[in-house]
Image (cartoon, rainbow, N blue to C red; front, side):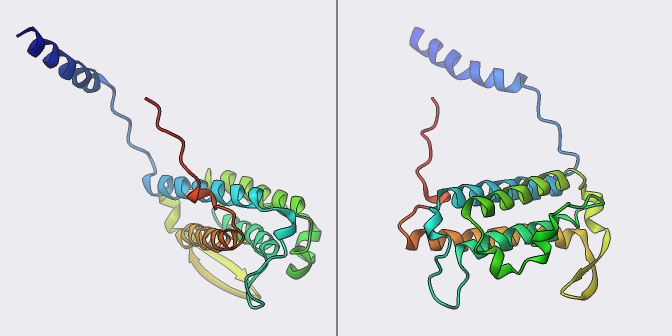
Length: 194
């Protein structure tokens, strides 16, 4: 009987404590919060991927038709500014040399320079996300790309940004595997805490 009593208390105590816990308040902007969470995860994976690729591999590309790792880095930084500049009124300040230099030349910049540029674009995007709300996702924006101006919704920029980063992470992960480097999402996970 005593064992039954101890078992009931052992089961009931955690449930009663959980019932007393204050439920989390609903997020004010749940759609934006989901995009922000996913985007920040992709940024962490991309930063970790670039950090783990040696400088000598930044000119690597699996076939002549594909992009080098250095090209992906400079392209990703440019794309981040393109998308995140459309999240609100805040606009990035990018050095004039970055805009005036051909992509093929930027792709040959030193590894540390390329990684610093990618990480600076991530930092800007994190700040740009702070101005987003669910209500602003439907805002109409006008953008110019390659000399063509068009109208779109802010949501298309947020979705495009997440998809673009996922695409480039997948690309990098494949390049890393071809060079016997495990991509961040394939690394062993830390053991769960007891």
